[in-house]
Length: 272
Image (tube, rainbow, N blue to C red; front, side):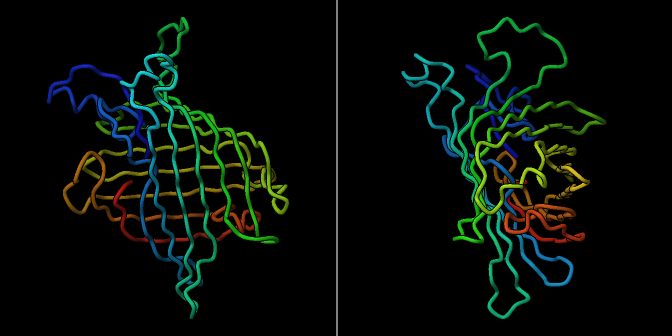
């Protein structure tokens, strides 16, 4: 998932478990300059041709929270750069081609509502954390196979505990600044919101679902289930059996307007 920064001055070893929560970005007393972002995995399977799908992702906190710049402008504390790449690899064909890749750099702020210099009343309905900023996505191809979008994102996260497991609900809203010449109708297939739901625990199984609904029943669902197979290295990076199901539109940018039948893949993840 994602990691946010929660400012803390002093933390004991006993407190650290409550300060860090891998299901919500940033619930950590200490965030490294370079840190985890979205899942990192490699899975194989499909229907028809056997395809591999792999993803890697990281984020970089641009300014240290103790820097003079942040002291002068505290709103810059949560400013990040991130990069995520997702690729489809067809291993059934002789040349083992990569069918398409999605390159997704972004700039955004991570913050809690209480970080704002506003008189926000306390209640149970405010999100625990918010990510907002700019995201670009393209497949790096030449015309006519070029696909690209530029979006503004607003991504609130709500987290609570249900039956001794963590539940995170995070609707990701986006508006389009621009669209490529060969995908001007992409909003008809992607819509304007992805709904992420995660449920599980750090040392056991984890279920993650992404739902998307666009016009004329152009829907998408992706289901990821993972289970640790070796001791975690640090926080939520380790080794996991990773199962992924995908059905609907938008598995890749090149096929954003094509509906995919149910794709089942299984493999390994180091971040989930």
